[in-house]
Image (cartoon, rainbow, N blue to C red; front, side, top):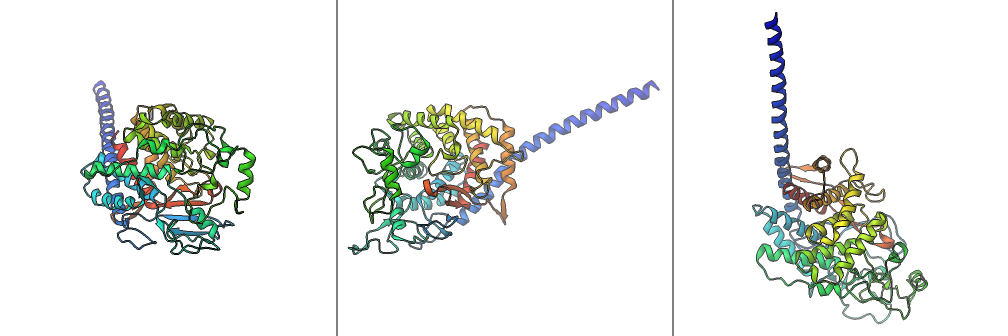
Length: 469
């Protein structure tokens, strides 16, 4: 009888030992499969990026090297017209996609299939270049007469969307915006990456191009900044790289009066035919634009030379401390786009953003849903989750890279959610298009840009960087 009891104890011990060993093996295999799985998902998503890149140029319709982008007017708007959706060519999207793919290649140079994709994309981006300044849109012939009298012949080219219908003269003139700090940062970063990948000698914008337009000693202010932010004379980077209207003495009443009379000739806010239009005649200061400038200057080793660096970092931190996420950005309505760009700038070398990175990370960790997702506001693609989750995940990866404390479990939950939302077709996968840009100010919640390629490449980039941690 004692022998039987002893054997029973030994049997239990062996079963327990076997259970622990099998669990450990299973855990190791699960982690191994997890990394292999992500690599396989990157491969399949890159197949989509390759097949969806536009191969043929149809002037004023689409351009070789870019990816499909939809410009959405989500509801009728009194001076734009009825609800519509149209494919749009713009520097912001193709540059952002190019740069995300370039970063993937720089982390894994075995992916030679990316090189022709990147070359075609950069050839298209170069068409937006005007002496190292970049515009959101290409210069194209107007689609109609823009003056009631004295219409020039031939008509000068203007910046405008490719396919989106501009119903009246006013909105056609308003679309003719000047070069901006956002597209200039992204376009020059694409040129920088192209130099690294192909050993080319593309010239790059100096920090002086951004320091020329700082929020200092101005004689105007944008109504959106006045309404939501009390940070005039911040010294941060402004959005538009073009002169704004200057009053002899600026005050809020003048801004309000001219903005309300925007359709009336003589209003300082009114767009004029064939002239670059700084929206409402007044430049603005945006936290995401500032973060994008800091990323470019950090990557090109110009950060410490720029007068705007310290001021920009202080402005970003000041605004983030208010935690007013909904109105913190003029052009980026997705709730976690600020987090994405601030963390990216910090990881790129903007060390003065450490406090800001800690603020965005804390906000992220407080807002993750049970299923691992993050969501934006109701009006952003019906509580957009996929684009929002990848923005949050990207910020966490960048913060982790810089040594901030981020739980791997939190990131894996986000990855698991993203994978659950993939769309499979043959040997390709992609994700539903999410909102990543808007028309800003009055159109901030109505006019959106969405692209399956943009969302998909953001996920590819995130997964590749996560694997490199």
